[in-house]
Amino acid sequence: MTSVLSSLAGSLRVAPGAPLPLALQSSREDWAPRLARGQAVSALPGLMASLFNLCSHAHRLCAQLAIEAAEPGLLPAPQQVAQRLRTETAQEHIRRIGLDWPRLLAAESGAAATAWVDAAHAALQRCPLLLPAATLPADPWPDTLTWLQDQLLQMPATTWQRAWQACGADWLHDWSHRHKGWLAALLRAARMADFAGPLDRAIALRAHADADGQRILSTALALQPGFALHPLWQGASAHTGSWTRLNDPSADLLLTPWALLGSRIAELIRLCQPDAPDQSGAGWLCFGSLSTGPRQGMAWVEMARGLLVHQVEIEGADREPRVAACRVLAPTEWNFHPQGVVARRIADLDATGPAAIVERRVRLLMVAFDPCVPFDVMHTLPAGQEVQHA
Image (cartoon, rainbow, N blue to C red; front, top):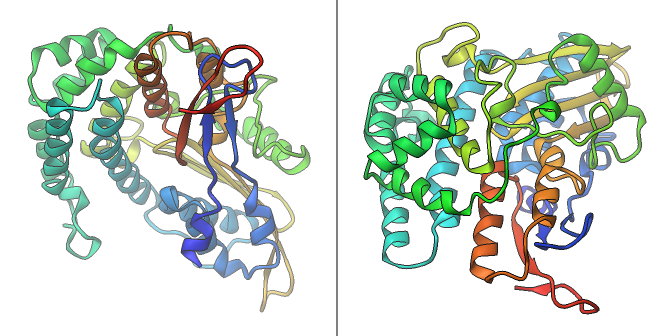
C-alpha cells in the first residue's frame, strides 16, 4: 500500500527561460480527497502519512489535529504536539542539509564534491537526533546542539544565531569564508549560483496568524475548485518556509534564495536550544486547529517546508464514523505554483548561457524552496522547437 501511494506523489518539470506557466510544471494531483472519502476516520492519519511519505510525520499529526477539531474525543487526542513537531522538523532539516545539499549544490562533480558528500554522510551518522526511535534518548537536544556546533557550524550555535538575526546573508557570507568545514565550503561554492534579488516579503505566507485568516483559507480550500493545487493568498501566489514563521524576529531580513539556506540553519539552531515560548525548542513552531462547522475541522502546523493545512469532514454513526471529505494544502503547492516565486525566477533565467551554470542556478532554487517531490531540469531549444530533456 505504501509503495503504491508513494508512486502517486508526482514530480516537477523545470524549463529555464521558458515563459510562464511552462517554466515550472507539476504532475502532482490532488489525491487526498479521492483516496480519503469513505475511509474509516481512524485510518485517515496513516493514509495521509503514506500518501505524503516524505513529510509523513507532519501529515499524520496535522490529520489528527483536524479530526480532533471536527469531533473532539472521537479518537485519542494527539499528545506532546509541540515536541513531536520540534523533533520531526529538526530531523527533516538535518536530513536535507546532509543528503540534498552536498548532492545538489556542488559546483561540479569531482574530488571536492565527493569529499563534501562523504563528510556530510559521516556527520549524519554521528547525529544523536537521528538515532533509531527505540534508542533515542529522552532528551537528545543537548547532545544534538553539541553535534551541530562541532559538525556543521564549528563555533557556538548561539553566537551563529545572533549574528544571523542581526546581519542575515552578510553573516552567512562571512561565516562561510571564515571556516573550512564541509558545510561552510559548500555554501561558499553555492553562492556563485545566487542570481536573483531578495524575496518579496509582502507575499510571505502568514495566513495562519489569526482565526480570520485561518477561516478564509479553510473556506477557499473547501469551496474553490483546484485551490489545493494552485493556491493564492489575497490574490497573489505566496511563499512559505522556515523564513515565514509567526515567531520569527528576523522577518525583515533581505533573503535571496542562497540566504534561505541560512534561514534553515538558524531554525535548526533554535529547535536544538532549550524550550522557550516563541523563541526556541518546543516553543518555536506554531500549530493550531479550529472547528469550521458541524463535524468539520481544520488544522495547520509549521513544518520543515512551510505551512501545512488539513481539512476534514466526518459523517456516519459514532460507532463507524467515516471521512466525508479530506483536503490537504502542502507547502510545495505554494512555493512551486506555476505563477509563483520559483516559477518566475526560472522563467527569468538566461537559458542561452552555459548549461552547467543554468542548472546550478536551478538547483539552488530547488534546494532553497525544497519541494517534497523530485524535479527534472529541461532546456528550451531555439524558437519553434519543443522543450527536450537535458
